[in-house]
Image 1 (cartoon, helix red, strand yellow):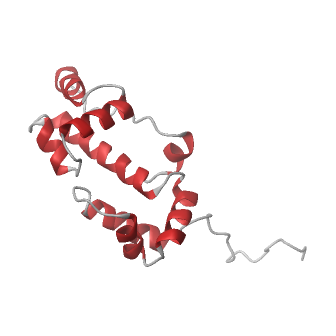
Image 2 (image 1 turned 135 degrees about the vertical axis):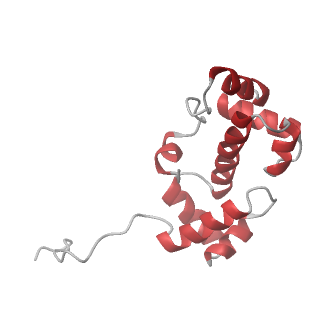
Length: 147
């Protein structure tokens, strides 16, 4: 055996960062509470890890902070809701935990390049679900984040 090499097939190196079980607990908490205001401490508690360790490990695994991940999921859900076009933009903003419609509009425009109203219009009149417009995320977050 060479030093530094595991030759046993059952021994596998895990991915850096948060382990799978803690990530799945955190992700489930986030998805269940997407429309509510919660803190990093709340998500860390759901993962059963201290807040500071969780934040560090989460960033290492996903490539962005936990709260940036939450925002990404909120914006993805907003795109789905806007594509359906069955509710007002203010209602979409409120349902996803944004402070108000103005905050939602600024955040959505920064992420997609268009306003929520224009996005909704494009989807309804172009016959798409918005899948062609992606969020502007750092390359590492785009590659490593949960779908």
